[in-house]
Length: 138
Length: 302
Ligand code: B12
Ligand SMILES: Nc1nc2c(ncn2[C@@H]2O[C@H](COP(=O)(O)OP(=O)(O)OP(=O)(O)O)[C@@H](O)[C@H]2O)c(=O)[nH]1
Ligand SMILES: [Mg+2]
Figure 1 (cartoon, rainbow over the protein chains, first blue to last red):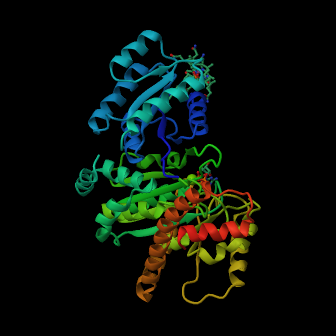
Figure 2 (tube, rainbow over the protein chains, first blue to last red):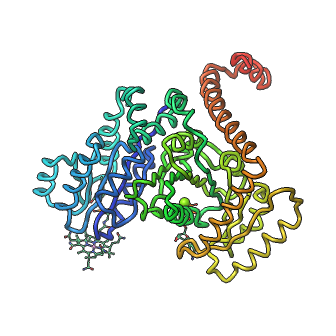
Figure 3 (cartoon, protein in one colour):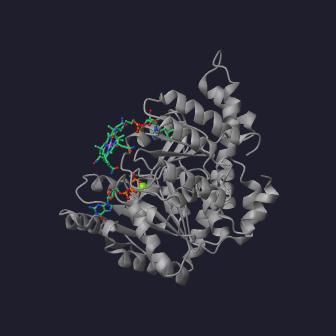
C-alpha cells in the first residue's frame, strides 16, 4: 500500500472533561480509514499544535463543550501561525452557538459541528478538506 | 515541498521537516532523504520496549524520557499501534501517557500505525529511527504494538530490548513460552504494586534458569511506572547492558542486525508492491496454484 492514510489529531483543551463526542469522532474517522491521534484531555493549545506538527497531521479537530470555545479556538489558530503550521486543516465541534461558530470561521476555523451533526457529514468533510491538502504531491 | 527544501529544513533542525521525512518513509518515498542523511546516523542509543497490551509500555517510556531528560539527553519516541485490517485506519493513543513531554523541544514523539506489518513494528519504523538519529536525538525509544509474542523485529532493531510483563494477567506464562526469553536484555515486572508481582518475578527467574546464557544474562527489574518507582534501577540496567555491548564489541553485531532489519523492510516493501501488481493479473482458470506460483516467481524475476 503506497497511499498513506490521512492523519488527524483529535484534541480536548482546557478544563473540559466531556470526552464522549471526541471519542465518537475519533472512532468514526478511524473506521473511515484514517490514522487518528488522540491527545487525551486538558491540553494546552501549544501542546495540540506541537502534537500535530510532530505527527505530520493533515488536520486538527478540537472538541469543546465547556463554553470556553471563544478563547481556546483562537489560541489554537494563533499557535498554528506561530509554529508555521497554518496549512493544517483546523476544525472542531461541541456546544457552540451559531453566532460564535460564524465568528470562529471568520478567524480561520474551517468548520464547526454542533450536537446532532451526522457522523457521515463529518467524515466526508474531513476526507475532502484534508484530502485537498495532500494533492498534488504533499 | 520539494526534496531539496525538505532536506534544507531538516538540516536547519526544523521539527516539521523530521515529521515530513518520516511520512515520506511511511509512504515508500523515503529513499532520497534517508540516503542524503544516512552518514549522520549511528550516534543514537536505541531502546526497544515491548510486552503485552496494557502492561505499561507507554507509561514506562514516559518515565524513561523523564530520566533521560534529567541527564540532559534529547529523546525521540516512536510508538507503534495496530492498524485495522479492515478499514486500514488506526487509533493512536500512546501519546496520552507522554503528555508531560509535549512541549519539551528536546523530545519528539511520533505515533506510527503498523499498516499491516506483523512482528510489532511498522514497515518504516527503522527509517524513522534513522531519521531521528540523523536529526541528533541522543536516545531513541521504540514502543512496539502490544502483541505479546513474536516481537522478534524489535530485538533486531533496538540495541537494548526491554520486555515488560505484568502480574496477575495470566498470560505471563504464555509470554514466557513464546520466545520472549530469547529477546529480552532487561525484564521489567511493571505494576509492582500488584499483590502477584513477586510471584511473577519468581516465574521469570525460574524460566531463565532453564536456559543457557553465555555473555549477557538478562536483568530483572520491578517498576511502578505510574509512580516512577524503579525507573532509576531500570535505567541503570539499560546502561549496564549498553556498557556490556560496547566493552565486548557486541554493539557491532547489534548495529548489523538493525541494518539487516531495515534493508529487509525496504526490500520486502518493494517486492510486496510488485507482487500485488503481478497477482492482480493472475487468473485462476486452467492452472493449479503451484504452477501459478512458479509463474508469478518468474514474472518477478526471482
Ligand atoms: C454527557 C454530559 C456530561 C457527562 C460527560 C461524560 C463524558 N465523559 O463525556 C458528565 C455527567 C460527566 C458531565 C459533566 C458536566 N457537564 Co455536561 N453534559 C453532557 C451532555 C448531556 C451530553 C454531552 C455528550 O456526551 N453528548 C454526546 C456526544 C456524542 O455529542 P457531542 O459531544 O455534542 O458531539 C457531537 C457534536 O457536538 C460534534 N462534536 C463534538 N466534538 C467534536 C469534535 C470534532 C473534531 C468534530 C468534528 C465534531 C465534534 O460532533 C458530535 C456528533 O454529532 C451535555 C448536553 C448536550 N446537549 O450536549 C452536557 C453539557 C455539555 N454539560 C454541561 C455542564 C455545565 C457540565 C458540568 C460543568 C456540570 C456540573 N456543574 O458539574 C460538568 C463538567 C465536567 C467537566 N469536567 O468538564 C453544559 C455545558 C454548558 C456550556 N457549554 O457552557 C451542557 C451543554 C449541559 C447544559 N445544557 O448545561 N456532562
Ligand atoms: N497500578 C499500576 N498501573 C499502571 C502502572 N503503570 C501503568 N499503569 C496503568 O496501566 C494502563 C496501561 O498503561 P500504558 O502505558 O498505556 O500501557 P501500554 O503497554 O503502553 O498499552 P498499549 O500501548 O495499549 O499496549 C494505564 O491505565 C496506566 O496508568 C503501574 O506501575 N501500576
Ligand atoms: Mg502504549
